[in-house]
Length: 88
Image (cartoon, rainbow, N blue to C red; front, side, top):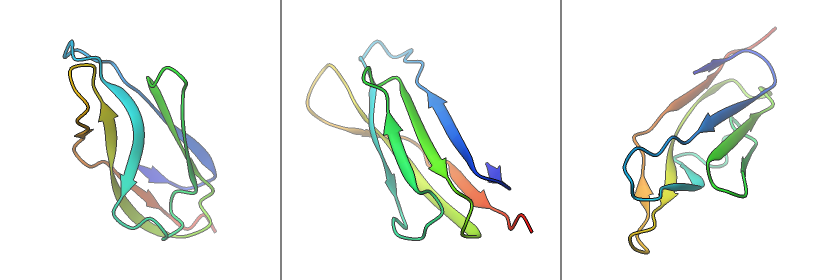
């Protein structure tokens, strides 16, 4: 995903596994780079939102962290990427 202005990126979980997957967070490879500024998760765990103020150009990779209803183990998603482009 390429970002050119302030925005909120929303991901809705559609669990087709039957394992009761829920978002519990996002794990960033470069947490303090300023690309993503905040994350918010809905109370039911089906929606995660990433706030990007687009104040820092660059890119970051992350993985969604999910829980499941079968056990206490966590699942990591494949890593999406956010790229901030200078909007000036």
